[in-house]
Structure formats: C-alpha cells, structure tokens
Image 1 (cartoon, one colour):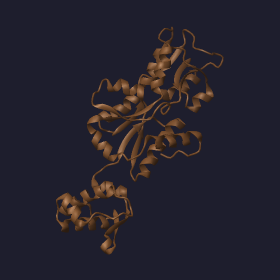
Image 2 (cartoon, rainbow, N blue to C red):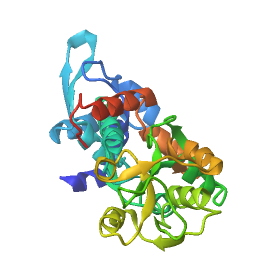
Image 3 (cartoon, helix red, strand yellow):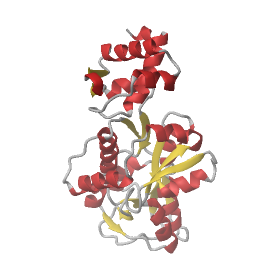
Image 4 (spheres, rainbow, N blue to C red):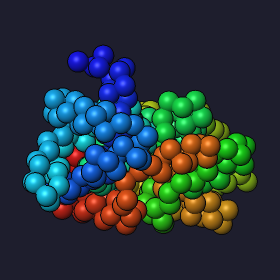
Length: 308
C-alpha cells in the first residue's frame, strides 16, 4: 500500500494530508478546484489523492450535494505519518518529582487536545538534554533558565523558545544533611556535587566558596544513597523530591550569591535550535503555556493523576 505514495497521486496525497491536519472534523473541505490551483496539480490527481487517503482510513468524507464535501472523521497520527511530519520529540528531566510529572503531563495533554502528539524522553543532566538538540536527536530540551543562559552564551544558534515562569522547574533548592543532629554545614564536611548538573554545581560552589569543605563528584541518582551511607555529609538538591525531603534534615542557603542564582534555577524554559524555529512552530499546537502550567499544578496538588 505504502508504495503508492511514490506515485504522482501519492505525492499529492502527502500534500493534501498536510492541509487536512489543520482542518477540524465536521468542517467542509476545500473544493477539488481549490486544491488543484493551490497545489498546481490536476483535478483528477486531487480526486485520486483524496480517494487514497480514504482507502487508508486516514480520513472519512461525506458528500452533501450542493453544500460540498465534509470531513466527518480523521486519524491525525496517520495523516502526520503520510505527510511526513514526525511528531516533536523533547528531552526533559527524569520525572522524579510531582512538578516534573506535572510538566510532562501538561505537555502531553495539551498536544493531544490540539490533535497532535509529542514524544518525550527523560534524561539526567541539563547539558545532556541540550546536547540532544545540538545533535538533532530531539527537537527541544527542557532545562532551567540558569542552564539555558550558560549554554546560549556558547552556542549562538540555540535559543529559548518557551518560558514557563518562576517555580515551574523547581520550587526551591535546599541543603540536605546526612546527620539529623546537624543543623548546618561545618568545615571539613564532604559535599556531594553533580558536575553534569550546571544548576546544582553552581549553587554548590556559590554556597560553599569560602568554606573549608571537600567536594565529592557524583551523579544525583546516587546522592540519596551516599547521604544514607554517610559517604557524604551534605548536598544541595531539589526540595520537590519527596524522598529526599522526608528522609533528611534540610536548611536554606546562607550565601547571597547562591540565593540569587537559585532564582534562575526555579524556571523551566524550552531550548531549541534557532535554525529550525519555523519547522518547530509549524508542529507546535496553538496552546498557551498557562494551559500546561494549570495541568502541572493539578498534578502537584493531587487533583490529576500523572499521565505521560
């Protein structure tokens, strides 16, 4: 069946599929003559292309005499496949907190409500996610504003595509202590730091830059266990992670520099390759970021079950 799309009629069907993706079910489709003129193809080719799309069950049409032909049903996923328009793929943090689960749920649901699809992949490290955009393994990356600022200064082609506002990425970072009898970090302590996380690394070095502490390089997946086993005495991490917050005593930043940096770590932004902005805009549904944020808040409050 799919070999038909290499024919003249098949190529026409691809172009018409692109048009029909934008048309709401129940609406009248353009006339054959309209498609013929817009796509510079014959009327017979248009009719054959529409028949091919119906044969594949990508669309269902109903002729209503002088009123015209109406689109009574469509399979948007199939139309996207036929049109050669792959869904957007984005990378975001591992969904270990309700805030991240809410962000993922919001993205998936708003795309679905607009009749589109988004594929999300989850990985640790903002720099790793940015790299997927640079190497075209993903169309966008969700990172903190702080990470975006540091990366955009190095790569002029990257740009911020969407901004979600304060507290959309994390509510706050705190210092977590292994010893419940300690209320603050003391000189000589071992501090866990993830060098692949620009946010955590900059916050850590800012908070303890004038302190006599030992830094232990590890990834955040190991931080909890390293605190439990007393391999490190303290670490800075996302207070939204309930497992960490419920297990260890925490304290707030004392360094004005760390407090200032933390403002940029709280906001989620979407970074894209600026050279592909037009392509990404075409695939991004007409939705406000506020819709995504509303769903995120519902997930955080337990009103909505995460689904991503």
